Length: 462
Ligand code: SF4
Image (cartoon, rainbow, N blue to C red; front, side, top):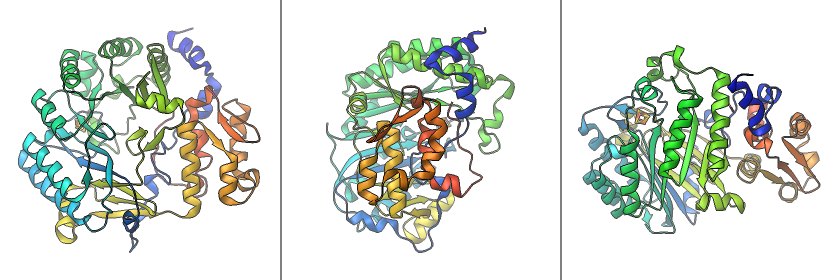
C-alpha cells in the first residue's frame, strides 16, 4: 500500500467509497443563496434595511498587488503605479459617503480589509481610508471588536504595523501559502519563513490579538513531505489561526493560473492525502479544526466559540461576532442586510465610472424571501454548530420538520446510511466523520442547487 493510499484509508477513517461519493464540487456557503445566483437588481434596493440594524460589519476591497502569484483567483490588479491606488481610494471613500444617509449610526463590530493586497496602500493612505470611513461609520476600535487586515509578508514593513495598531487593527492575516522553495518558485511567490517569523514577532510585540496564516495545499511541486515541512515551520511560529485552502486549478476562469505547469500539480489522490494529513498534524499540535479550511489554536476565541456553539460564518469565513448587516466597499465587494445581498461591479474602470456617475456600484444581488431566510439559518446551523434543531424549524414554519423537509430528508438518506449524520426527535447531528462532508449535508437544504441547475463551478469538498 502506498503512503497516499495508507493515509486515505486511515486518517479520519475515510474510505475510498466515501471519498468517491462526497468529495466532488459543492458550494462553500459563505452565503445562501450562493453568490452565483445573484441577478440584476432591477430596481430592488436591499440596502433599505440598513436603517434597521444594531451592529455593522464593514469589508473593504483593495485590489492592488505588486506581482502576480500564479495560483491567484482573487479580483486583483497587478501594478507598480501607486497613482492607481490613490484614485481608487478616492472612489472608495466616495462610495462610503453614499451610505451616509442609508446606514443607521451603529457600532462597526467587524472591519476587514481584503484584496488584492490591502497593505499595497501606503501608511498615509491607510490613515486616509480609516479617517474617511470614520466620517460615515461608527468605528469603535478596541478589544471587543475584530478589525483585521490581510497583508503580504513580502512587502509589509514593521512601521506599517505601528500605523495599523494606531488605526485600531487588532488582527493580522498573513498570506504564506507554502514555505518550500520549489513550490514558491513554481507559483512565483518567494517568501522566507524567517521573514514571516520576524513579522509575526513584531506584530505580537505591538499587541495584535490574533495572527492568522493562509496556507494552500495542492500547489505545483507540493507533496506530503514538503507540506509536512511547511506545517512544521508554521507550527514553530504558533499562529493563532490557520486557514488551509485547497488549490483549485481553473485556468479557463483565472488567467494567472495558465502560467502554472499542470504537470507539476499533485494528482487528486495525493491532494486528498495532503489535506487529511495536514488536518491530523494540526489537530495533534493542539489546533481545533473549526470545519471547512479553518483551524484555531486551543484557547483562541474561535476555538472556544466552536466548543460552546457560538461560531458563526460570513463572507470572511468563521467569526464569533456576527453583525446585523455587512457593507462591502470597493470593486466586486458583496454586502448584505436582512433584505438581501448586493454586489459591486468587478472591473476597476466600471466600478470607478459607476461611483462617479451615481455614487454607488452595486450591479447584482438577491432579495431574500422568508423561505430563503429559513434555509439560510438551517445551512448556517449545520456549518457552524454541526447540528440542526428540528424544534426551531417547526416553530418557525408551523409544520412538522419531517413534513416540511421531506425532500431534503430523502436527499440526506445516503448520508444517514453512511454514518455522516444521525437524527433523533430533537435534531439532526453531524458525526465526527461527517465533518469532512458538512458542505454536502448543508447542500441538501439548498433548494436552488437542486431545482435550478447552474453553470457555476464549485470547489471540491476534498
Ligand atoms: S495571491 Fe494575493 S498577493 Fe498574490 S496576486 Fe493574488 S491577491 Fe495578489
